[in-house]
Image (cartoon, rainbow, N blue to C red):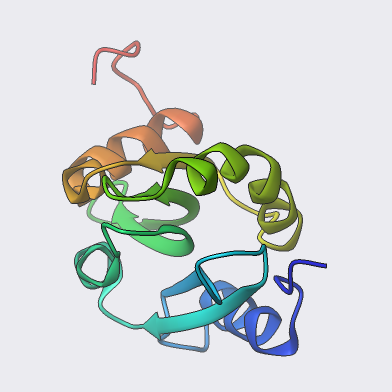
Length: 146
């Protein structure tokens, strides 16, 4: 088993999903350079910018993030994104296994509106992620023209 269903990861997932907890992201990394064991390597309250700063260019990592955005002046939406990060210096064999091993992470972090495949921190710009979440949530009243 990959370990992504460990008590620590499950507790962090519940914290990110909870309206009563300030935690809005979690980060899962490989325990070592070889093997498929996954461990919780971070949580935080600083949203996408804080999460992006923690990503390692030499690793494949998985993140789950809560994103809140305003629909209008009266309401806000809460959506969740699953981030699959493959840093530019990730070893070839690790990159090749991500498509297989990410399935276990998707089963644990099952409730998400979008998946963000990120190769660069710029792929996690909040503005772009919110645009994708709006489209996925059916709240795009611009006919898909952003």
